[in-house]
Every structure is written in structure tokens, then in C-alpha cells.
Amino acid sequence: MVSMVDRDIDDGVTVGAAAGLVGVTVRTLHHWDEIGLASPSVRTAAGYRRYTEGDLQRLCRVVAYREAGLGLDAVREVLDDPTADIGATLRDQRSRLAERIHDLQELDRRLQRMSHAHERGILLSDEEQAETFGADWDARRSERAGAVWGGSLQWAQFAERSASRTREQWQSLSDAMSTLQRDLGDALDQGVIPGSSEANNLVERHRDVFSHFFPLTRQMQVCLGRMFESDPGFSAHYEGIRAGLASWFRGIIDESARAHGIDPDTAAWQ
Image 1 (cartoon, rainbow, N blue to C red):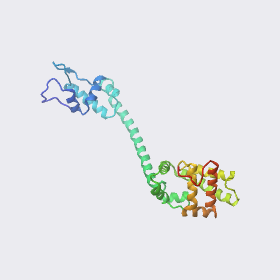
Image 2: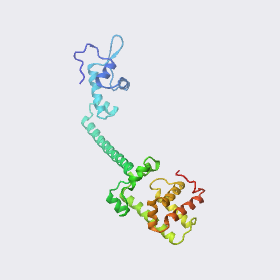
Image 3: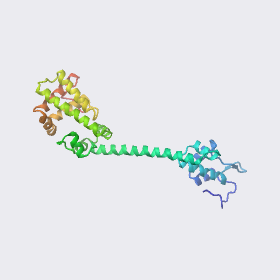
Image 4: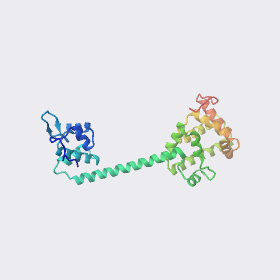
């Protein structure tokens, strides 16, 4: 507690000295003075206002309750209302603090998941990934993708969505992609022609499913189609569904793009 004992100034201390004693700024003391919460109560012969021992002790109480999180109106009530139940006020404040702590813990959990998603991509264990995406799924695939594309906008969007995605939602996406790929194989078997309405509908379904990972423009989809055909891993995946599917899939994507005024030969990732 602040004490005036042994001080040379008998008629109080200046606002600057008071601010230093109670650990707040001069501006804060001026504000408390203006709203009538805590004011200097004496004035020197020269007209300067000073804080007395009693003023300083009130300031200490104001500071203590402010540090406990009470608003200025609540502090005023505690100090000036003789009927105020200080214990109840503090219990209410603790209850609000507990809610705030819970909110901060939830925020920390979300931030942690987002951080992990930016590093790992899919936040499922290896076993969960195998159960969700199939036994031949490589659990390190998304981490390798992050190493290559980690600085891109699309990876950031993928990670942000992955952070809040549940295992059930991943399963739903996996099922949708599996159904689409099965339908692609069936369409190839049935001789569906690139540029036909059936082929274009499949291209739109692919863009819709893939857009759950990040927004996919038609030009981006053309770039993916090229990769499906040229990348050994992707090509092998589609060829494993149907012989010739990788090239046929690229073909229907290209024809759909042309129908929307995009030249597949010059399409870029944008």
C-alpha cells in the first residue's frame, strides 16, 4: 500500500508522482479525475492540485479492481456504494474470466490445428487415413504436397479448410471422389465423347468436388488435367481405374474449357 510516511511534501504529491507510485500513466489519472472516479483533493497555495494519502489509497484500490478486470463503472460502484456486495461482484468477474479462459483455450486449439494443417495437410492419423482413403493411400502424400506448394495461396486455403474438417467430412469427400472416378471409368467404357453434355457434366462434378479443397478455376482444372496425364503417380492412379483414363480425362477437361472460351494450350494456374 502506498504511504506518505517520511515524505518531505506535507501537502500531497503531484499527478506525475502519484502515477509513478500506483503504476499507471498520468493520462490515466487525468481521465479518472475527469470522470470523478479518483481525484486529487487538495490544492497548494500556488494553485497546484495534489494527491493526499487518502487519495493515493483510493487510487490503489481503483488499480487493484481494474487489474481484476472490473470496468470503471463497476469499480465506482464497489468503492462508493455502501450496499455493494464486493464478494458477489468478484465472483461474477471470476465467472466471466472463466468463460474468457475457455474461449481462449478454444482459440488456442483452433490455432494449433491450423498450424498443424499448414505443416501436414490432412489432420488424420496414418490409420485413419488408410481407413478413409483406402489401404493403398500414402499417408505422407499431403506432407510432400505441402513441401512443394506450401507457399501458395491454394495450400493456405487447403490447410485452413483441413483444420476444421472432421473425419466424417473427409470420408464424405473421399466417397464423392471415388464415385466420380468410378463414373469416369464407366463413361470411358461407354464411349462418352469429350465435349458432350455427359462429359461436361463429369468435368463440372470434378470441379465441384475438388473445390472443397480450395477454389478451383477452369484454368486451374486444365492444369490439373495436364498433371493427371503427365505425372507418373497420377497417371498410374487413373490408368489403374481404366486403361487410357488419364488421357481421356484430360481430353474432356480441355474440351469443357474450350466451351468456356479457354485455350487449354495456354491455360495457366490462375
